[in-house]
Figure 1 (cartoon, rainbow, N blue to C red):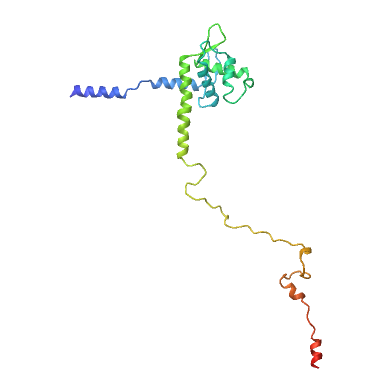
Figure 2 (figure 1 turned 180 degrees about the horizontal axis):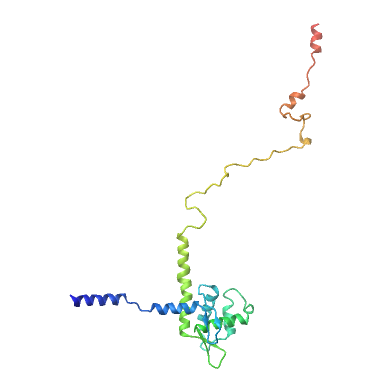
Length: 216
């Protein structure tokens, strides 16, 4: 029984064993996203991989890795500038130098000896490919699926459109005022008396003098 139990425990441990070290992955992520102090005691800012600037920089590294002779800062500028919709002339030399410094501090690129050109390292190419594919194939589709299933913020979940307070009441239209010149055949208007009773008051009264004279 002890022998069978030992064999079962070994099979369970072999099935639960993973092929990578989580501590190494955590250290690599911390190195990429956190600031780094270079050998010259210079603080190099971190790279937030979900940011559009970092994504454009990693995508440029994937394209520049196909050049066996390396690339210069001018080559990086011409590939990096069109991705955010900018012209190569809009990017200054300081911005390109800062990007190259960040890539060299994380060993994504390395300077070719006795030359001003740089070359993408094998580990840097794997890192660039992993983070660019992670954003475009996993994080963005996953967030789109999560946003589709959840209700939009600020809208009621019950069917029907809620009625605002006082929306069932229609505002009264102000009374139309007619100019006195537009009133015809209605006689003079007496203040304080309705127009409907106005013709009755202005109707001429027949005299009864003729009737009494005929009787006499």
